[in-house]
Image (cartoon, rainbow, N blue to C red):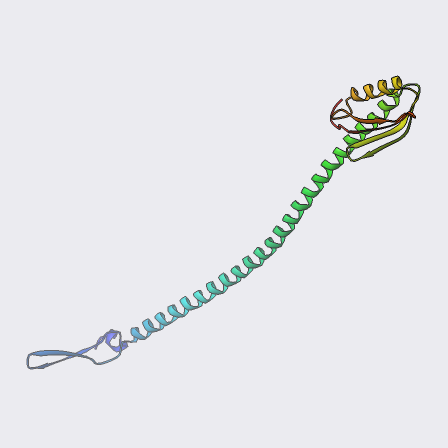
Length: 183
């Protein structure tokens, strides 16, 4: 018997002949087959453990991504709110600039009105509501009154010709639409 046969590395086959048929039967088990089976078992276990680890790692990563997405959604909501507030602030700034411009124009009107008033005319009230200006007063005579009306019409502070009424006692009432953009 050879050294390989003693160790059981090679299988011996017994051959039987029956009616011209050849059958082979394994007489001993192959020890390498056990190692091979063990190796295959370990390989399958390794692949299973690797798949388990990858599944665990991917699940963890997916959960972290979901948490990040939730935080991004919160940030996105805050961003939308900030954009809304920025638009509101911009509209307020535009409104303030318009009011400052209108205030400047209104001040210019009052300064011009002071220079347009001739001798013999007294203004008792000036009222401004939105874009409507009304002036009440007293004029000593018709010439003083008509020169004041003419000066107001050409001053550039009214959009169209002003409305006016004057009674026989010299009291007058003037109303007109204030023009904020001229001059």
